[in-house]
Image 1 (cartoon, rainbow, N blue to C red):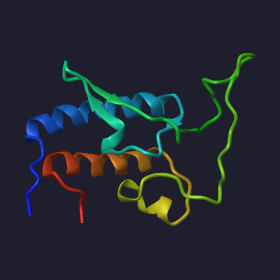
Image 2 (tube, one colour; image 1 turned 120 degrees about the horizontal axis):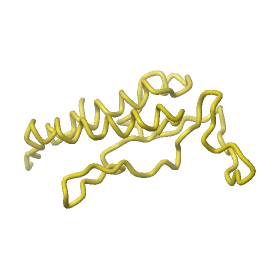
Image 3 (cartoon, one colour; image 1 turned 180 degrees about the horizontal axis):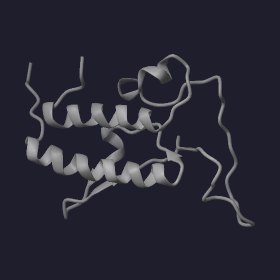
Image 4 (cartoon, rainbow, N blue to C red; image 1 turned 180 degrees about the vertical axis):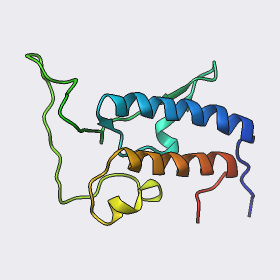
Length: 122
């Protein structure tokens, strides 16, 4: 069995701040990612973090950045199903409750743990 090595704590902190900033920017616009995981995060050659795959994202709140005459998306959300990737899902999602900003923060915690330890939490 081979031990997996994670990032140095300083790198984990630097990337974690960038991921948290990206989530804060989305949350400020009423967007919940709902599937934050290491596979949806890339680091550019310049050391910048990019959060990808907003395919399961959900718009919340009353102000929508998608409102207007050129609206080009349709809601296909099924409220009776659970969306996301199991190891990164917050407890409230597993209980069938609605995801919100806190759910993304839970996933961020799992991502950061995995980044510095090299494994998912038990």
